Length: 151
Image 1 (cartoon, one colour):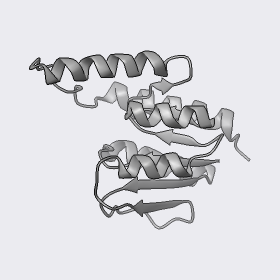
Image 2 (cartoon, helix red, strand yellow):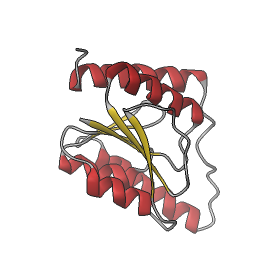
Image 3 (cartoon, helix red, strand yellow):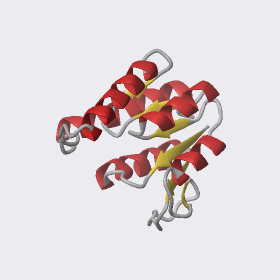
């Protein structure tokens, strides 16, 4: 099992939670982004820089993710591509995307995209708050316990 992180816009606090989990559980964790990222010295944590371009990091994660891996992303189309491969998806807010809910999430995303392109200003998501951080940490711990039990 590996953890693939869509790191282009990942909040630092979520990155820190992931770093602690990777170290504690000894799980290979790869941050994928189109810019250089600092990672702590660890045999379990690395970063992979892709060229700049639309969805280049997402495409790399799709190409490399395998069944049983965990993908951290808020990108719904990316989630929709890795779920059929058997990967698990967790958002930085602690929401799980699954085969049961990804279709509805894609439909809502497409609807909101249509609204924005017609001039409707919906704003972005609210800033990450303490509850979101705790929810992410709790969901990550639950998922890792189930997918990669402590040794």
